[in-house]
Each structure stands twice: as C-alpha cells, then as structure tokens.
Image 1 (tube, helix red, strand yellow):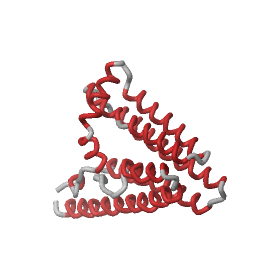
Image 2 (cartoon, helix red, strand yellow):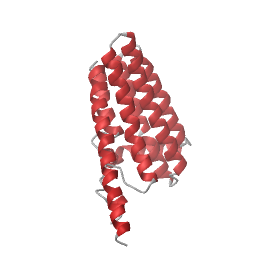
Image 3 (spheres, one colour):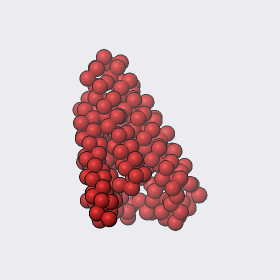
Length: 210
C-alpha cells in the first residue's frame, strides 16, 4: 500500500459536482460555444467575489451573501468548461486554486474591516482565524500532495466553508459565520496534518521492510 492510497475519500464538493453535472454541463457547453475561456470565468468569479466582499465590508451582509452565492456558483463552471473542451490543464487548475485563495482572503478581509469599524474585536479575531484556517486547509493539501501524500480529507473544504459562510451572512450573522469557519477550518487543517502523519509513518515502515 502506498501513502497516496491511505483512506482516500471523495470530498463533499466532488459529490456535489457529480450531482449537478446535468446542470453544469449545458451551461459549460453554452459558454464554450461563445468562445469564452475557462480562465476568463475563473477571473470573473474572483472579480464578482471582490464586489461581494466590498458590500460585506460596508455592513450589508445579506446583499453581500447573495453576491457571494452568485459568484461562487459562477466559479463552479470553469472546470466543467475545461473538461467539456477536452483540455483541462495544469495551469488552469493552478489559476483556479490561486483565485480561490484570493477570493477567501478578500472575503475574510472584508469581515475584518467591518468588525474593526464596529470595534467588535472578537469578530476581528474570528475572521483572522477563519482566513488562516482556510488557507492552511489548502496549503496542507498542496504541500502533502507535493510530497506524494494524500490529504483530501477533513470536514470543511472550500465548498463546505461557503455552505457555512453564505447562509449565515444572508441571515446577518457575520460573527457566527466567521467563528464557525475559524473553528472548523483549523480542525480540518489538523485532520489533514494527522492524516499525512499516518501516511508518513506508513512510508517509513515500508522503506524499512524492503
């Protein structure tokens, strides 16, 4: 057994993509027919998320939540477009991952700004920890996969983070949105670290038994 095969699981976001394939594929085909590149959709999604983040920073949580929802949905289409073109690329995946990190950071940055204007320092701390945890979840996976491990585990991937964040923003509960993501994202990062640790130990045992 290799390290990359230890407890490999399909993420909730992967299941969601399969579930909504019948909706995403026609949209992807339509946009491809217009000659729009997948990376253009990726950057458009980031731009829209930035607009939503600005609205959130001004204290308009419900409107900002709906804007985030709209552009998170837009961001699901780029991978579908690349797959339907038969040309998914490493660079396209790279652009998508980088734009996802920027989107999350600008969103939590907006919450930090809002809480600072309200002198709500618990909210500032929660938003900072949510941002740090969200980045760490992705970084741990990327670093692990670079070393040949699998780290596609954990309770709160990006898709689930938005499932927590957006409804709570829509219902004007920004503190709880940040606080729940802060706790669960960092727990997810720790889950991934522990998962990689187990694979590392397994790899050492295998090398010693050769």
